[in-house]
Length: 189
Image 1 (cartoon, rainbow, N blue to C red):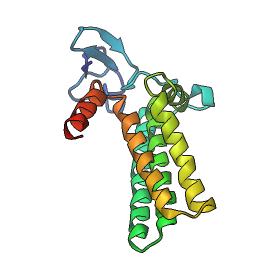
Image 2: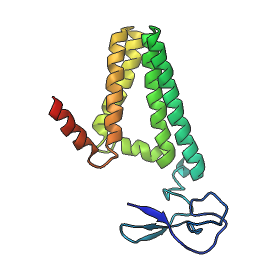
Image 3: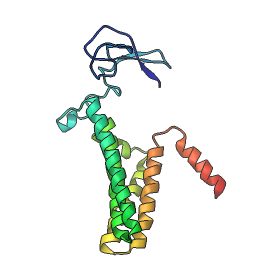
Image 4: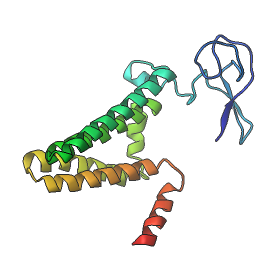
């Protein structure tokens, strides 16, 4: 759906909930769905889920949620990049651990957007349960193979499985993305 800011009564916040009141783009927090012409008052919240964190005992503004998401995304990338740099120095087990932690931190970042409890529920939805189970199993096996078994090649194999499961999980949120990737891979193999 395509939501755009609508015109409404004047308010002290802009349609994007960032304050300022003036300028183009409305001012009431009302959004218009261009597909259905519905008008929805989102209270300045882009997602309309201001209560996404009430179950956890606190509330975050949209800006705080976006900052949490971006912070986790950047943090996860930096952790994974650090692990990759350590791979070049020969620290294979450290690479596996840091890379898997980077993916987990990136995944936690999406919880800031929709709420952690909602994300947890969506992870175990029927369409995502397979990817989630493989993701969690691969994450555990990365740590076991790197720290207990001390077989770094096996840890790297599980890092690849972890990444592919994470990718498959992410694709489940994009309509027709899984079937597109399946068809594309099917043409090559």
